[in-house]
Amino acid sequence: MRHTVKLGLLGLLVACNGGSGTPTTGEPGSSSSSETGTTNATPTTGDPQPTSGTVPTTTTPDPTSGTTAGSGDDTTSDTTTGEPAACGAVVTFADGKQPTAELHVATDGADGPTCGAVDAPCGSIEFAAGLAAPGTAVRIHSGTYAPDQYISDLAGTADAPIWIGGAPDETPPVISGGGEALHFSRARYLVVHDLEVVGATANGINIDDGGAVDDPEATRFVVFKNLEIHQIGEGGNQDCLKMSGVNDYWVLDSEFYQCGAGGSAIDHVGCHHGLIAGNHFHDNGGNAVQCKGGSEDIEIRANRMVESGQRAVNMGGSTGFEFFRPPLQMGMPNAEARTIRVIANTIVGGETPLAFVGCVDCAALNNTIVRPHNWLFRILQETVTTAEYEFLPASNGLFANNVIVFDRGDISTHVNIGGDTAPDTFTFTTNLWFAADDAAQSDPSGDLPTPETGAIVGVDPQLVDLAGGDYHLTPGSPAAASGTAFAALSADLDFVCYHDPPSRGAFELR
Image 1 (tube, rainbow, N blue to C red):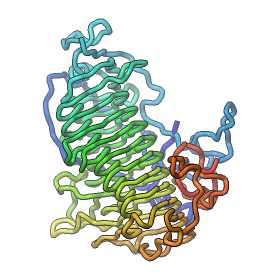
Image 2 (image 1 turned 135 degrees about the horizontal axis):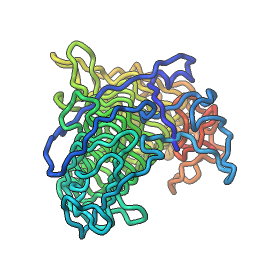
Image 3 (image 1 turned 90 degrees about the vertical axis):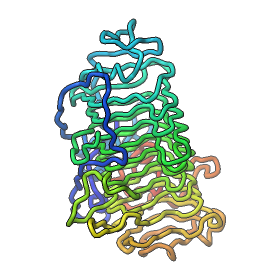
Image 4 (image 1 turned 30 degrees about the horizontal axis):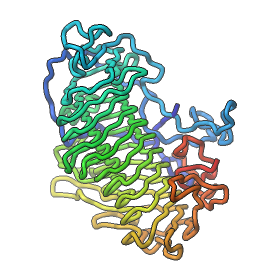
């Protein structure tokens, strides 16, 4: 299990600078699609209160403190396998909980007030969800189900969540076609798991706060796990997983591909306190993950991204003012995104792996970046100050411990910096830059806005099999044990402890 606690960019710098950074706090969220609607299903009741200790932000204290589960001595090994112990454990509100009731859904079922037993299943997901009380698991049996299922006001509790997903030990059910497979509005303590979604023309799964843009409790404590969402949209700005105004959430161990050509695999508008971990993104047109519209305190960790379009991770973006969560404030600075952390991912191909777009206090640490097609990263600003609202520029970014392998002949400039940004506030340290087609052309310093400390330039990182896609380090790698220690680095992409000093890139040397 992966343990998670909150720590902002100031905290990331503690190990490096010896400071005493204060953990940041998030605000409520936003939606570019804040639809409300009605359903014939009877909503569940209850207004659970948030439980301390479940916030899913994910950087960990210095492992020498000995107070955090999953930290401890780097050299600890599993006593049965001899492998390094797992680090970076993820903890969710649903851990250790078991359903106290089940409602069954099957393709040959029929909706009705008494449906839900194994031998009298309901016929639709929406109807069964409307019958679910806290502690209920909606078990969807294998088969293909109708799309456009709208589920509102579904409320579990901290002690008794609601589960909606495939039945145990069965092939995951498929929701095919339609505008959207599932649309959740105003959900709390909900686990959505073991589903395949394909062929929706708008979004695959949509979850929002029902238009309650100033209510951080509207949609809170949600887990998405073991999903396969693909072939979504009609070539435009459509998303596999659309999240608007969602707080305290996890997206884990899922696969997203062929999402909208101009959309995102996961799109956040005004979402806060989230963890995106252990997922596989590939063959996407716009982004793997986008965080905008007032999003804050989101960690994107230990994912694999391959050919994820224009900006694999878009930290920030451009959002209509009415969709920000919390609502924009006059007389104080606003931002598209804050404290987005991209840690220990592999990012292969795509136009650029990372874009800081109006993002404040955002960080990219220990990623392995392989052969992007145009830029190694970008610093941009799309939402600027108006007469009504002040917007902070992209600023105070951190780019550290990354391994970047590229072909100089394939990129334009190393870094693309746009206007209305504050690139002189960015920090660069201990990255490894290697142009595989011409090592002499590896140096990015002419394009970096501030000097880098501790860079390795033009030296082969000696990955296990660059051509074959194995980006682990070999024992002779210059990336091994040469990075900067940050409090955020609990675990690499394999959930193996980073050493002190850590290696550069997404994998610690075993």
